[in-house]
Amino acid sequence: METAVGTAPTVLVVEDEPGIADILRITLSYNGFTVHCAATRREALAAVRQHRPDLVLLDVMLPDGNGWEVCRALRAEHAAEPGTDDLAIIFVTARDAPRDVVAGLALGGDDYITKPFGVDEVVARVHAVLRRTRRDTGVADRVLRHGDLEMDEATYSVRRAGQPVELTPTEYNLLRHLLRHAGRIISKEQLLQHVWQYETVVPSTVVETYISYLRRKLDRFGPPLIETRRGVGYGLRAVEQA
Image (cartoon, rainbow, N blue to C red; front, side):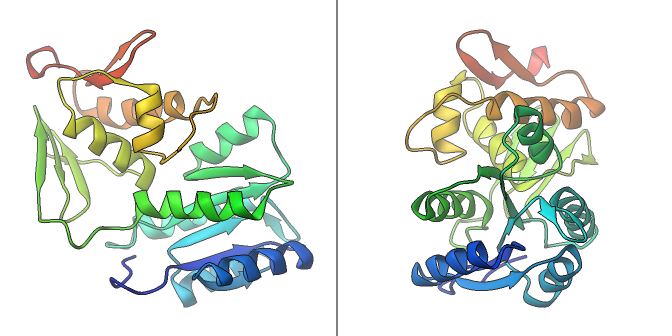
């Protein structure tokens, strides 16, 4: 999914509580977003196909299913449709147990906001996720390479040993940051600031979680690429070591 330069990002709010949906719709519209709403799993899937939003704010508990199912279906649909893999998904839910957060991220969520929330926080998180998931058409075409790993920033694609590697937007941006700083160890704090756009670093396992996702996908095609320097951070192994 690609949004024309200069157009307002479109957000789909999937929320079955009318009061919460109205607050999000009014707040996001006031902040310059084009907003559509859906209250059920079925409405959400239809709205994504109709409006092709840049980002979905997705409640987990829905009358006819749950947000996990919606996220899984959207990721499957978009993986099968070239050029649409930059749909961003933020879960907004009262389920705040660590296992729920990990489950949401594992399914392809780009962020996770727990209720109750402040509307300013939601707007800030939406902006942060869109900054890292929307394609920047003003950047010159560039191919990043490290050993048998290749990232084409023009086509938003990754290959290792000649094989395509399917990544979510957050996984892609994390790998791109590692590639751009190949040969260096990057701290967890730096990754949170530059990849997740967190202005204030707070305790979080999101970096460790996404590093594990990248390893699982990349290491299928060759030796381990990502190095962990315990207590320091992460980086790509030297080519001769990979």
